Image (tube, rainbow, N blue to C red; front, side):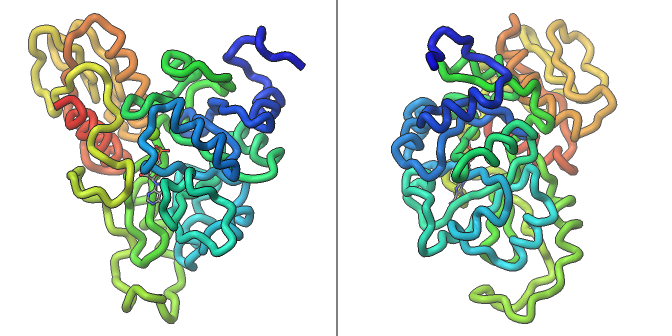
Length: 332
Ligand code: AMP
Ligand code: MG
């Protein structure tokens, strides 16, 4: 079958499977953001993902599985991480675990580390694809390294010349929350589409283990919340210069200056001629889903810089502020 004349954006899941089995890189929808996917056990094609994104080699990828059980030969599960993952998956949680002795995850996919980040996504298209493949998919976000994550097929097409499976806009519109599942308490490495509050609530039901290997006595806190962004990198790839639009951002704006467009949260500030609304009702979950699309929109508008209204540090507001801080740092 020749595919060269077919459009790069398509809705045929079988075609995406065909490309992947052919050892090609394909952009796919997930419930968080669009991913740039390839066969996760194939080190050579995984290296191609890095090249396409211009991604530094030390920045490891997330491995996506159809089901938790499918990962058991690749990573070592701790009881608490398994409890949390079983409660959240399929969904927007990524767990970092130690590598199993006979793991098939290649060095390239894990940035040379002896750990791996894994997730079971819920989007029906990627689920159907994963169930048809012999192993996991390695998939970072489908954008050039350091730039805004794509939440629609059109966002992907702006940056990358790859086949794109169109599944419509992503439901969460924000990357997954990454936790370190190796030690207790579980530590959040990157805030994301699953809030700290939700994780803590889910862990309330975790029966206390009698012994906790290598990590001392149980502590009361189940989750250690993410630190405010700093240059102290716990998680490779979580460098400050990330998730950046092309225009300069001014955070916590209470007025509009000349040439500024507005990223609004709630009733817009007076005087904004260009405005992208995150949530008129001030709902942080809705705002998270619209964040990247709104920044893409303002990047393409006539405004010169972007004023951002204050967003509360509650629920998904933490993840939104994390991305905005990093975007500012990237532009400094
Ligand atoms: P993304 O760019 O959204 O695909 O996110 C992948 C991120 O997961 C990387 O930038 C790392 O920060 C994190 N990650 C992946 N593997 C590991 C690992 N083994 N240890 C710690 N963090 C990891
Ligand atoms: Mg990314």
